[in-house]
Image (cartoon, rainbow, N blue to C red; front, side, top):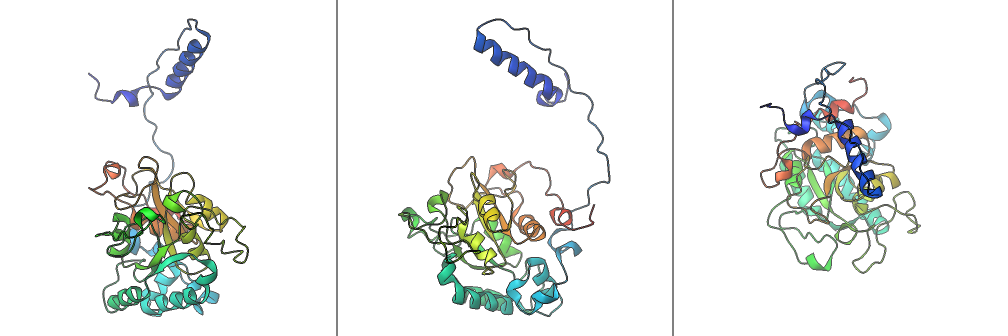
Length: 328
């Protein structure tokens, strides 16, 4: 008996041809000769250089020398640029958090990206990192977290009356992975009620605006990860998290000039995230560029015993290297 699984020994084109023939037979009610089931040929050897090993969040590709015009205002920095300055001792996590909190205080009344700002907790977390060993490129990086991700002891509402008093006892797995890497939660972001639409109140009134047209709420900011997208695009957070069921990461990213990633199902754990659909939800990052999105996804990805969908996938590839120019 062959040790090759049946589904890997059947030629896919032949299988689809047989399926099409069966469908045609059913439609006309007659007999149709079916193509033979061809056996798959030998596996082809990939052409090109072998994939680079994943250097992870502390590899050289995760750090970028800042653009000179971004150094004067820390909220202009990408994750990779801020990480470079923090590693070089030229910027502290507390300075970076304070810069974002000042901008939130000034502008979020217009953007309405956040439904909860954790100012005191963010400053405390930043101070706690002082003098500690760096944990990689996310060390000291302030993030915006969509309000369907559990955050321990902090209201997590999914913008729904159903969860308005809910304070989860633990962090979502993805949040725990980010903070374990040194990331700091700035606050929870506005979203479509139960991740269904652009960010509105639970009864449908528009809240969050597009960061590029903050005075015109008619401009669609995309949803349902609207608040995270607007926070990142408006420089109220370095990057952030979203969830996608039918476009809730990619649509607001397209609408607001960001890089958003909907990962493969199971690449990021759904444990501790209030779902819209258990079978179609994908947690992922919204970021300012491809490298930042790769840094975020590298941190969020991986197996989780609490989510069986994360089991058995190939190892996380070198996403940060792939997002680095000239990396092959």
